[in-house]
Length: 216
Length: 249
Image 1: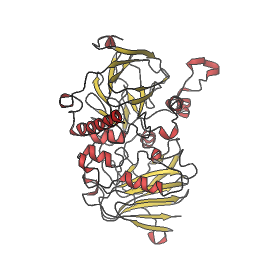
Image 2: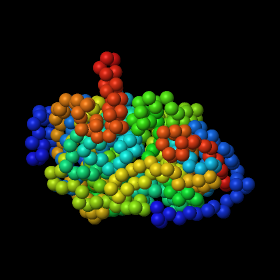
Image 3: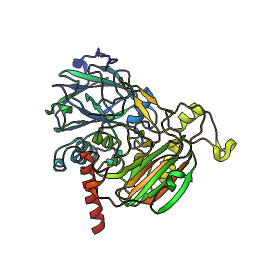
Image 4: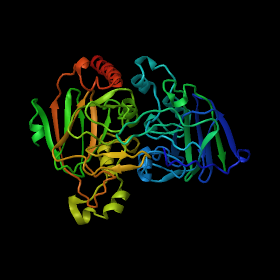
């Protein structure tokens, strides 16, 4: 993409209030308060981090909305400056730094059933992002169910939308040490599935850990 | 309504839905819903649910990535989040139906077109796609949590090489139509509010003809939609299992 700009963050991980390495195939669910900044760090490169945000105040009513976000900014891709909008038309987070340059929000998460359709009917037993989402919300205390699992952001994923209306999953444009950082504009619950997909190049066929870092 | 009259198959339902109105029906497998854009001004925002388990619903990302497309036309199938085909686009005179534009809410309608309440304008008052969806969804005990990214039939939003999105005002012509074949029982919830990216300064959503007719029998080996992409054949296989389970339960 010709217009992408890479913006580095001035924040120092040594001064973070929270750090956790999330292995591939695991969910991460964490509250981030208004004004805090959360970074997703692609430790080894080419790793997709499927992410949904919920309002902490009313998680079953207000959540991240992919279509409201891309319509509000008039562009299909997310990068520095993108405001992540809710289904109620409110800003949830703003991307403040991005050394990758472009992130997808049209492709959604993988599931056992979509893997069957996309690759082969016998792929159903493979681990997938929706399983991680459902596990995390089932173990949480927010009252969330499958009903609240909505189209997500695929951080570090490259899914070009062509002028002719084509949509393809391409090899990632991320690399080891690349990151994306967001400032919360409201209190949010962050739900990440560190993607276990082995059937396409979104994780370079080798899912690897990401690190979650939070600053006050 | 000429296009609808050309059908060689029994019509079981026919109605005209004015602009800015809602409609829903649990369309049985074996029937096809035709939408006709009477004046070339229509936008039909649509969501699909499994009436036996509305947790299963039209899934935009799975539909798009499964068929490597962001636009929908003849041959494309509308997938649920459970890896099944809910409906197939068996005929289409338009060529591009929108999947990423979403709907208007009351704030957007007010900002764009001004305040036009019922008190002053009666039944011509301005309504948002969100309001119309929520009213019709409520009749099925569904609500905000079920309001996921929708289809916008007859509308076109396309991207340039940098991803910038644009609305095409000349996408659909008077009499254009699209035929949606129910491959499993499908609750169709739709409304005719304006597309949120439509730059027209006047609130004038078009009327739509709704026609339901009995589908031609589906022979998977020869079906255009089933064979349009290998993913469609697999999704259709999952739907066939679903339909058998229903038959024997």
